[in-house]
Image 1 (spheres, rainbow, N blue to C red):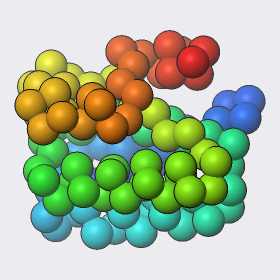
Image 2 (image 1 turned 90 degrees about the vertical axis):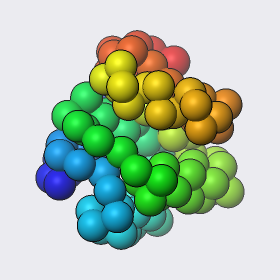
Image 3 (image 1 turned 120 degrees about the horizontal axis):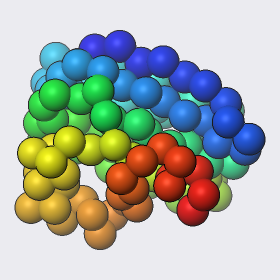
Length: 109
């Protein structure tokens, strides 16, 4: 998994590519939590390059959302492929984190 980051206005955008599974989730989680330690105004996770997500990946996102709430930083997700969005919906994650179709939509919210 690769993670690229970019600042757009007040948002820290993290673009992940590859598989978000038991092997990559710990590093993904560390990156998310490290970036949240910098207290950005908000974080957008662009997951359009994610091919697969496991429960370990969902857990990493959940921890980031919780940490974000505790420091007043909104966390949103965008760009989910249809089969990944289905995983988010079936697991109830669409109630936990804001899901947006595109990065532009997430930045406008």
